[in-house]
Image (cartoon, rainbow, N blue to C red; front, side, top):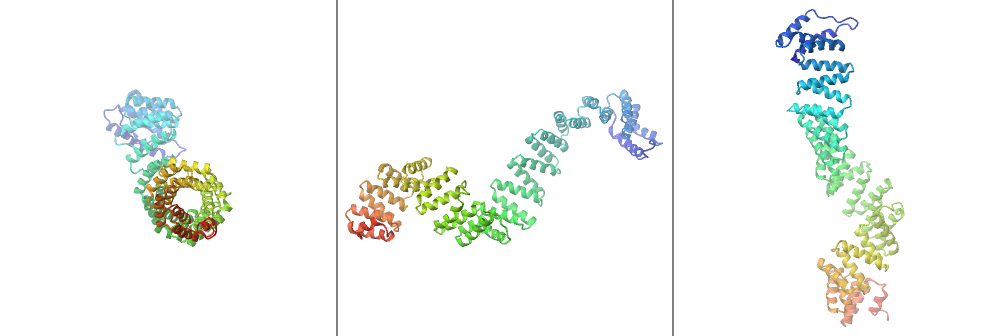
Length: 539
């Protein structure tokens, strides 16, 4: 069989021939016969005449005369029918002439003669690609991968691109990763696998691949930026900070990077590091909505209410369609114990943000604090149509509905809260108090109240509730015990003091009862019933 390294001499001859004038027939060097003899001398066991025809065919191929090359190859094949090199070269000529089926037949013949022939299979695989016969191409490239035990990355890459063309994304990614592992210099293929993972939303895999890329090229801003986005989406803020700090060192302190870094610090609960970054951004004129919102929140956490509301109003001015500015400003007013101020901020935009749960809930809560229960219930009901699972809204609506004597609604809300969380101590207590105030279902009320006390034995409000239930159950001694404990913990509640006075009356301690009523009246000066009980005005 003809050895292909003999072609090196032929190529030198071809280069000489092809450098002649295009308008003149090529000049055959006088020592061509010498070249032939040297080649023949290298392969004494091969058929000399077959080699001569093969060499002449190669020369015609280099000249682009494929028809003449085929004739020479045919003569060579007659003399050496098992020469794979002759068959492959003839197949190439037929391909060049557009006779693709003939070319394929010859390559298949060559492969049948020599199944491990890499050149024939590679040529056949590439032809199948051009002929849009992907499955046949995949078959040949798969065999080529197996024929190269140490692996040849280009064949694996070809498999990846072919499977990707068939939209087999996971297989393509696996091939690209394998190609990189085979040839670690092919960083471009690793990047392609990473990008493909990202585009197909395989975020964990994309994150891991970009991490590998960063280990290879620590100064690549694109790798770092993409990796940061991926780990932040996953909630891995610690590693996000580390990567982002590296990116800031690489790119410098841009507003975008400082903003990202500050936000990550804030989400990690590190307000000490986040705050100066946000303040620096504000000084730089940055008006990123999230930065302003987080800075206002930090000031609020630190009880710097004046600073918090300045930033909140800046957010409102620059982003009037962002509800966070209004909410931040309203939260400042509520922290100032000024629900009217919160209403002044939220009420004008409540219709604009009628689908925004937090606006409706906070506005409804503000009205509830002012005991404007009619307005509160409407807004709280609206908030629950947006977010039905909000326990806070359900609690607040239950209180407001109870105050308006909409007991069917309040009872349903309390029972739903307790059913979904049997340890909801606030619902247990408030429902108990609602029932005892109506003087109904006192045993049920007592069971719920005892459970609330078991969970929070030192809660003044819960102690008053159970004491008031015992009072309604005509157990004045237990009532006195619990209500006195409540007042020991908190003695500035007029309602609880009034309860104590009523219990003392039940125990015939009228003098102390009058003293207690006077203390309650001092806290609730306009309470006509207290005035009567304290003897300030006649019954």
